[in-house]
Length: 98
Image (cartoon, rainbow, N blue to C red; front, side, top):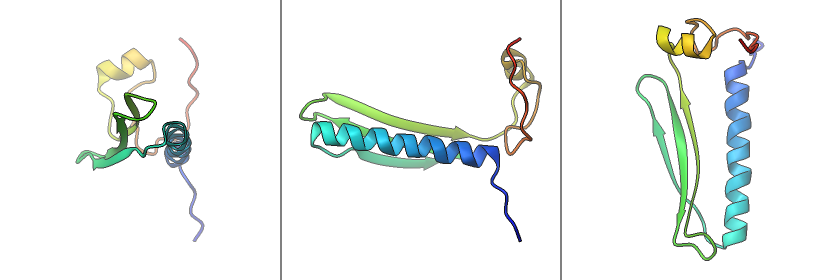
């Protein structure tokens, strides 16, 4: 069976690749590793936090990604001008400026 990657999944993978690249660059520049903490959100989503403290170059550095899954409240949807669509695997929609 052919599995199609959703836009959300593709976006998450892209952002995590960028997080990896930034983390590697910070570690290379500083010479010390970042501490990583992964977490999940019961309602859907999660994240990875990477922190360096008291480094050789950086006093503090952080490279964090959070993914939140769920339904937008009516107020949030109005503020974003996208309607009350599900954020989880919603079909692609045009995000035109209002």
